[in-house]
Image (tube, rainbow, N blue to C red):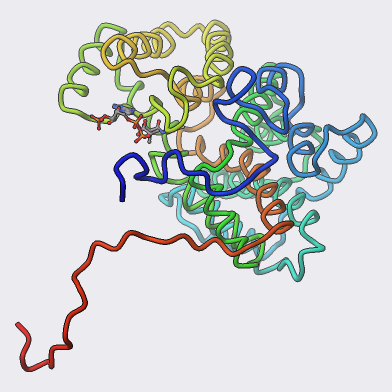
Amino acid sequence: MAENTAGLRGVSAGETALCTVGQSGTGLTYRGYDIHDLAEKAEFEEVAHLLVYGHLPTQAELDAYRERLQGLRELPVALREVLERIPASAHPMDVMRTGCSMLGNLETEADFSEQDWHIDRMLAAFPAIITYWYRYSHQGERIDTRSDEPSTGGHFLRLLHGATPDPTHVAVMQASLILYAEHEFNASTFTARTCASTLSDLHSCIAGAIGTLRGPLHGGANEAAMAMIENWQTPDEAERELLGMLERKEKVMGFGHAIYRKSDPRNAIIKAWSKRLAKEVGDDRLYPVSERVETVMAREKGLFCNADFFHASAYHFMGIPTALFTPIFVISRLTGWAAHVKEQRANNRIIRPSADYTGPELQAWTPIDQRG
Ligand code: COA
């Protein structure tokens, strides 16, 4: 394979009307809307509606959509039983994958005319799946996953903390969910589309995408960034340790990007929220450490923060356990994945690329007693 296309970099693998990355606006658009406008002005459910149903909802449509989602938040008993059997030591992304798959066993998508109902159901149920498991396995509590929080971000925080969420935290969660909702043909979305192209069911497409997002080179980077910065007490210590990492040629999670070359447009938005939260909680460690890491990475490697880096501190300031960072990404990206599955199904041809063969030439069969 020619070097510059390794990892299919620069290769167009299909068409989409959903998203552009590094092409227009401030660098990321969903159906033609700039990410800065969406993150500043929209509710996450408006963006979910835009992606899944193709247009920004009217007020009446948004109200009806939110009401529909609220009505789908309770988990089936059999799913709760499965979640209770998953140990506290499990990886939360494995919990999400199993939860999604179990939902597919209980509520199988019989044919594609049902896809919208299942997408709504998953969007309503995913915050419940992760928080139900977390609260049961870590705190021994069986929570009621119904809530009248109108927003997905507020609902997640309420289930996680068992209390009315702080309005600023709800706003941060909603913005975060918007930032993570869609990103063109990234690895997990491509997995979902490949699965959809075989005419498989929605839950299989999403379960495959969750498995792909789990890796630290993709969604797992926000957790990995947190694990790194929480070790450092001061910006000077961070700089010292970071220089050591770079010398040892270690990857620094939360930096760099496969498509963006100069900056990730999502970073400035989540960084501003992280700064505000740092002030509110009186942090004088994590945020200054994060800023120093950003400065050193730019100076030493010319690398910039991607969306994941300042998400780590922002989530931490809201009391979200590190292990739940990537599942939040799932709750959000589900909308992008589902929109891509719909798009693939609407104009499908099975995805089946070719490979450049690098194995042996054609050779004669060797009987077993003549091998070795
Ligand atoms: N830390 C240290 N070095 C990095 C780096 C990072 N986070 N990201 C890229 N580099 C280095 C690469 O190792 C490469 O160096 P080399 O040529 O000596 O091998 C060089 O910068 C160019 O890499 P690039 O081609 O731009 O990256 P990619 O397209 O292969 O990979 C990522 C993109 C996102 C997988 C990669 O930047 C990475 O692993 N980042 C950390 C994980 C992460 O934050 N993922 C979330 C993405 S939203």
